[in-house]
Length: 232
Ligand code: MN
Image (tube, rainbow, N blue to C red; front, side, top):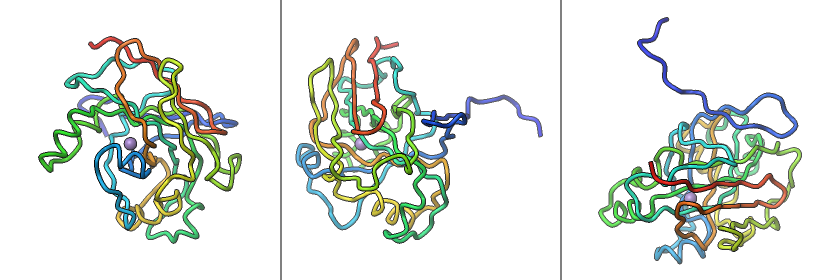
């Protein structure tokens, strides 16, 4: 088969203790999965069911990069998140079986054009301009699940900008846990290896400007770093 042209279509993430990289298929993101963050966004938490949005795999950027301040926004925000990497297919998974689908975990940033997201929200339109833009899904190397904690709750999830702490919570603050997210998402999608799930951000989101250095930690995983560059 010949192609008229080629597109850059291979996005992958390094894995600790593994020579091969993890190829990224889809990027699912969870909204409002920490109560204190929902409150700061001025909305109620729906504890019955999570909700999702999707970023293209081409939005992936590896930790350590400098990303230009994105176009079309005057309110570019960080969101520190635990990322789940799916390693086995799951469809209508039970909560009790869901962790079998997890390949590993990583620290990530769901970068957001907050002004565009809120404008879309106000008009009851989709969030794509605010969320699904280029270079908006930052990720650190993946740690295999077998090498990580079996109880995801006490680990701190924190983010600092230029050394000043902005977000500080624990994974136990997740409203919908990782198994619950996989069980729910797999009601609607056939999850497959390559799917990433950004599990939502704690309270303390805020803006960054060119020159800012973001440093995010999920305890026990490699940190995620991003420098905000000048706009193009
Ligand atoms: Mn988010």
